[in-house]
Amino acid sequence: MKANLLCLSSMLVWAMGLPAANYLIGPVPPLPLTAARMALAAAVLLPLWWVIEGRRALTAAPWGRGIAIGWLMLGMAGVLLVIAQSRTDAVTVAVISASMPVLGIALECVLDGRRLTGRLVAGLVLSLTGGLLAYAEAMGSFRLGLGAAAAFGSILCYTLGSRLTITVLPGLTPLGRTTLTLAGAAIACIGVALVGHLADLPGVQWQALGPREALALAVFAILGLSLTQLLWIASVGHLGIGQASLHMNAAPFYVMIFLWLLGADWNWTQALGAAIVGAGVLIAQSAPRAQSQPV
Image 1 (cartoon, helix red, strand yellow):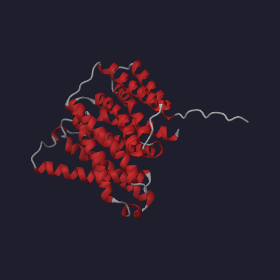
Image 2: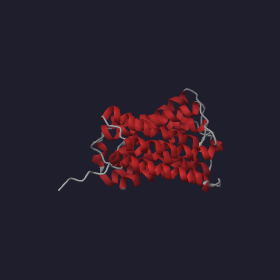
Image 3: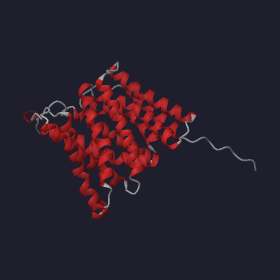
Image 4: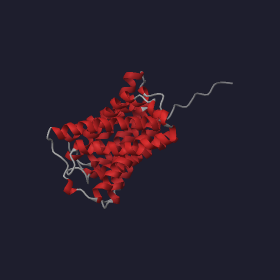
């Protein structure tokens, strides 16, 4: 229950960041926006990691692996996420994230020899159905293309990186894993953004930025990334990437909640979709009842 609540909270906080990103996409191109997001998120968690676990935890950490995993899991995924949202919208990105359970469970079946059960398949189908129902009611149809491909690539990088964070960094706490990969992603993204600047790629439109955009960046980075990652990695360590990713299918509903708070209309069909997702998660994680033994 604790791990599922952590995962649910992670998805809820992650959903806050997508509407906030709408204020930044356009004036800030994908590469510098991702670099700024990663740098701010890492700047928040690094001092926290130092204070809680001490300087030795930072100096003894495998920074090479952290940078590599962070770039794959957060850097590449972050750039593709911004590209996807710039070509579609927050809800479309959230719905395409419904592919994450399929990818997560496929990785566990291929790499861990996980066996597919009827309950797992039923839970997966329900969670996908709920997420798609919430999207279809809100948008009416899918807007696919390069944006959808970028969103799928983002989820693929994030799913694989989440698994590597748990398997390749086993000696670290959830805070250490999260901070190390975030710092690694920040280092890699800043380097790529600098290369893009030297290559004369489109730059930041500074005149279009103000206090509202600064607040949006804080929400997108601190809540939608650093806090999300901390909760997510903690839950994946207990549930595994396959089970945890089932929660991703409720993301369209969470995004709708925040859009509603910003003035959009409420829709009870989306609430039904979220309930179906919740039922799918419970069914997928339930164990068959043990048969009673004769006395």
